[in-house]
Image (cartoon, rainbow, N blue to C red):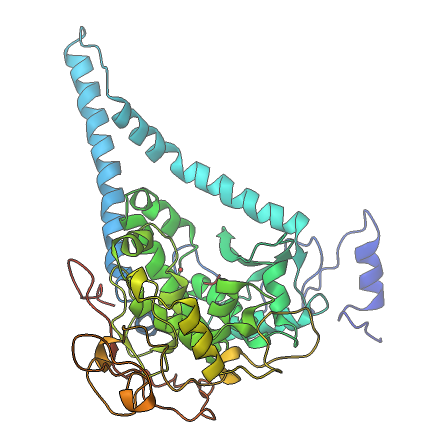
Length: 477
């Protein structure tokens, strides 16, 4: 008897479609709609209640994690156990006292009542919130499949394979309305990722498909690392409410997911941070190396404080971590080293008096004119453009206003500030050295799976209080 493309014999298929007709007993050909008797035919084990979604060895998963993630999760679990045990002891003591002393009237503080109520209802609330979130995606979102956004679905399948997942997570595209975002979540044994349409659009060839691959790898990484499990949510909920510590844990998870994304698609790392910084239209007009370098130079108390309050690493720090794969992403203190790369503008952290005046800036732009065919306005064009760092001109040195990077402070003939070149020497002594001359034809090379060499030496001044990273490495969106 001939078979249909769905693998069901015509008589069985017809019987399955007729209302009130019992379903066939033979389930050997796979899945049938609405049949609860079916069993997984996959050779891979099914998801478990207690266990990671990923089948990768635990030691290998920990090697991908940010080194500060596990200690922070351990602190979160300890705090949760303390809340539950302390609440239970408090209730037992109060009940015992009420029985022994009938005249005793219990008037607990508001804080104690709130903690007990939250501890009791948190598991139920979390279950319903996750269930409703997933339900909204199922009835509102566009589900990726082999026939719906197949290119994106193929990326999800490949990312799931690379992350060792037991099952391919559900994936949806929802209307972004101008928002650049993506997230991963779950309900029960199910896991799903959601990509806003404005971010999903970067997968088109006119922009950068590799950036979308990285983002999907980032979100799948959250699933593989266990960040979206029900028990992880329950046992970290109290910790996330602690000022600074909760956001600290969140940033470690984002760096971990970035590591998954980089492992899956290192070619998309650069443009991913560019789209997060400037949006889908300008993503290929952002110079990734200038963006990453600013993580070192933008110092100060308020930039340090702004980082402490964010759930995601600053985009400049994130770019720096994706470029320099020799150390984990920074959590509290900014990075200290840059590769040798031309710096054309004085960092914003420097005193305003060191910024260029209009005459200096005009002269510098005339000295290093941009090519007419290399515009940086972004467009909705259908022709792919190389990211800016691969097509921009390379300036010979920095616009001289009296400030130079610390590693170049010292006289070297031929610098932009050299009197022999006609520029005035700074008042009070030796001429500082700016970036050495670099042939304008030199352009950075695309990263490989080994990552770019980022061991050069541009050092910034130390942040107040410490210069050490937090044992240094979520999406990701």
